[in-house]
Length: 387
Image (tube, rainbow, N blue to C red):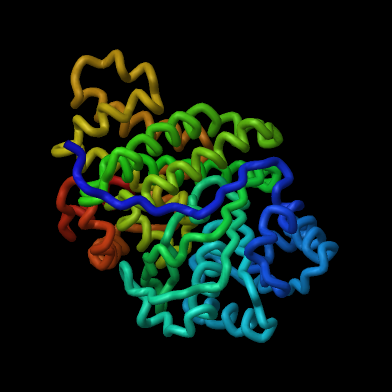
């Protein structure tokens, strides 16, 4: 018998080469007359948003832009973006870029639409809404933020906090593979591994809302990601591979939006928050070590999933062998893709581990979903193994 569950996702999804340059057609129902675009300086320097903005201007929309989003965006930046959108008289918010830009756009739409205080919205289900109409356009294939009800912001010096609410799901998610063609290899690799982590953790999540839809989506996501990530990294102009990665990232996002992620993300946040390591790479650094830790209780689950990504692992005779090989093969894939594989390679030393372990324990909304309970000592030992 299937246990009761709920499943939320974006209202409308468009997957199309060149879709961003036709946003006036795809998003006419949501834009009002004064849309406001949220992005980052890198996007603007590359001109990736220009065709999108031009299509809206040509269609008669009065568009303005906030382009100061940074990785691990701080709360003050969200407040600045809200003020800029308010000054414009924004009728809709367009998030355009990587996960940070989409996360900021979600909160701009929420806070401007509802007038609520961000400090009252932290946590699960605390955002009141309503929000302004919201369109999200990812330029990386990794976060899946365009289909998740989650926004992660840095509070204070290095603490990551999340707002989790269906109000953050957009009216429209636009998947345009052409926007990802210019991604550097290391970004393609890191964001791709991030998407794999989303699928793996969603599939194995201890959440009471782990459900057949999320598990099915996680499997399909891993098939797409596994089939395309090496081509996307080493043949970056391959549009088919880019499309496969973008679709795989979206499916993984839909999976973990409803069957939440766990200890990999919890342990990754101190790496990103304190040492400013990109989120995807932070996940990749601890992934195999968290899986090895979890194997004590989750080996059968990982054994079922392993051949989805590495088909030859189905030849191994026992669940324990498949699960152990799964963790090792993921570590080898990360290295093959050219990513760092040790915390020491990103400037972390043994003296940093106690505070990292303590900080990881603050991520209770994530740790509760892990197949195996993680103590502060466990977190320290996982970091030590990754050092």
